Structures are given as C-alpha cells and as structure tokens.
Image 1 (cartoon, rainbow, N blue to C red):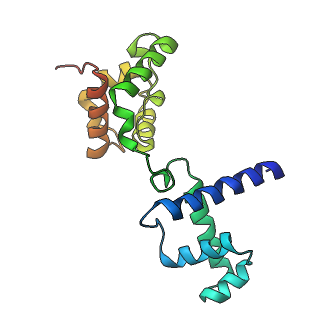
Image 2: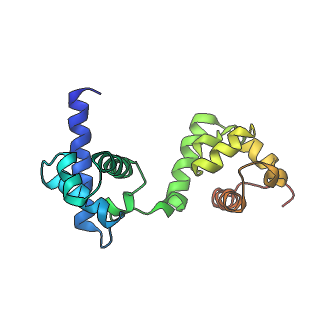
Image 3: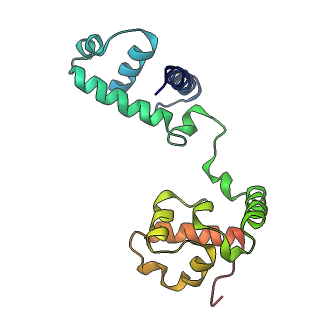
Length: 175
C-alpha cells in the first residue's frame, strides 16, 4: 500500500471512529475494545503501553484493534453507527427499484438477461444462486419452484428472494 493510500485510509478510519463516538448512543464494541480504540486514536501509545494499561498481551491488543478497524472500514458493517441516516431497507424503495430497472434494461435489455449479481441480494443468497448456476433473473424465475433444494438457501434467503421478486414485480411461474 502506498503511503498516500495509507494516510487516506487512516483519515477515513479516524473520521468514522469520531463519527461513531459522536453520533451513536451505543457503541458497536465492548468496553475493552473501546479502551483500546480510545487509547489508539486519542493518544500515540504503543501496543505495549496499551496492553500494560489494560492488563492483556501486546498481541491481543493488536488482534482486537485489527478486528475493530476492519469493522469500522467495512463498507456497510457499522454504517448505521457512523452514518446516522443509513437505512439498509432503502434498496427496496420504489425510486431505487425504478432506477435499477432503467439501468439494467439499458445495459442488458430483457429482464431474463439481467445478471443475478447486479440485483441487491445479500452475499450469501447471491453466492448460493451463483453456485447453483443461476446467473440471470430469467433462470432464477424459471427455477423458483425448486429453489428450496439449493444448498445454502434457507428460509431467510428464500424470503429475501421472494421480497425482491415482489418489489420488482417479476412474474413467478405458476402464479
């Protein structure tokens, strides 16, 4: 990683941490992680100094810090904490659906040709569909009756698929 990229990442990390502290009533980590993050961001203490202060090993400080940094930098993981207006349900608003449909129609034409990876499924649902060689919306709609036989698609994933199909008003076979 180039030095300029590292500085930019550090700035984003620090800004998100500050936003979490200022904006949320509850913190997304435990007290020990909070002490470590506070010591890391507010003072220039080494891992060893933080470890001595808290009473754990230097390696454990590094592990906890790395875990929380990954969580803070994840694109959506803690977004509700550092972006107060974040709403994961916004993807199924009529405006968003209309925009997505227009974009996909321009890019791929018929609904049958729309790639599954372009639809906002959760990663588990999308990966399960792709592992079952369901790569387009046409294939998904065609195989709706036997989706419950696909490994990795449980009740939650099936209800997610059904809610997206209803939101986009796609036609299911036999309905």
